[in-house]
Image 1: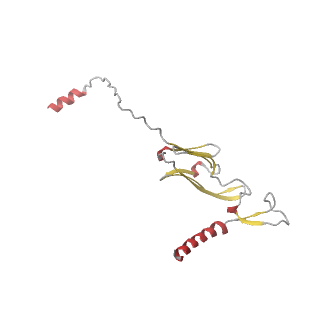
Image 2: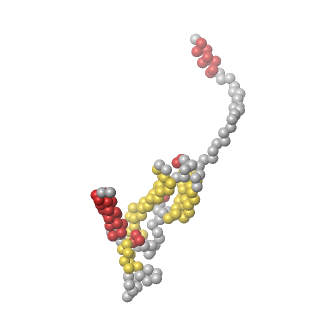
Length: 178
């Protein structure tokens, strides 16, 4: 293994670390309830490593999920997003749920949220079988069920319908003889 390929990977990881860890807003934690206390030792940690101190989560947490070879079911909390901020798509063999809203004001200041969650589509489920529903309280349900296999019958009788003779059929047959 050459050192040049290692260094490229290392610099990428370092750039990612700097962006995610070092440039993230800092959260000060101390005391049993993570509230700042006078005279107590305080720990500074990147906000990306801490649970939320105030308010709710950024959204996108999975409430429930069930997967088999023939079905997929997931419920995702997207209550922090408006219906227009949501997108569900099938890309290749993945169900992709994306939510994004621009910066807006909340009770603590301004916030911008974005998440993307990918689920592998079960082996026997075609992409056309994926559906999604959004409840009023912000629960997005994504469902995909494989169609039932059609029963193969050896022979099938086709009924013959009796129709009245069409008046236009005589004209067209006499014109074709002419």
